[in-house]
Length: 209
Image (cartoon, rainbow, N blue to C red; front, side, top):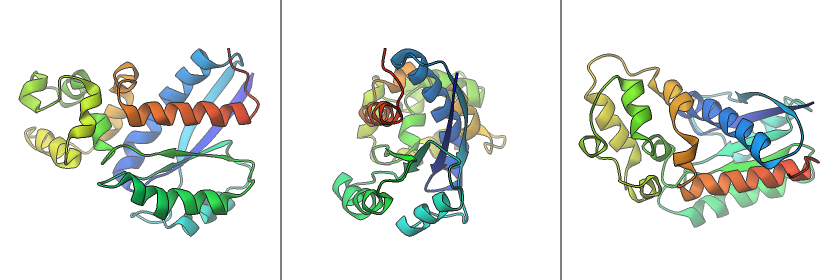
């Protein structure tokens, strides 16, 4: 039995509510479906010193404050309007500074914003919000992969949540538990994360089925 530990350095506090719950579910599925090893997957631990996004140097510092604590470190940064800008300003410098650390670095880069992944599953939204609205009434695309065409996913999700009178504070955590992994498989940025995570686990010595 192997024990898989991982950390998340994300852009914001809302991301820390949603992504760790989603990623630990996805990691469990990856280990069960892609690898021979029996694996116990620990909770994904958010690493954060301040509310806002970390600099590249901050990411390295957070990892160095937790030496040998994690096998995988997920670095989250929304793509926004430019994938090239994220790659040049964030991913390339981070990978360069990362060097030959034992921890494997995996990027989590939703197209435009993390909220796009929350909009991929109408059933999850209905369950979390306690509503019966159809996908069309919530403005969701017919196919999950089309969430990457939504110009402002954060606004789209906030508009849906604003229609619920009670507090929406904990819905991000709920959605991390509820969003269908099968539907996310249709979202290209999620598939990219899945592939990069499999590659990282292979480098750690996990044996493919």
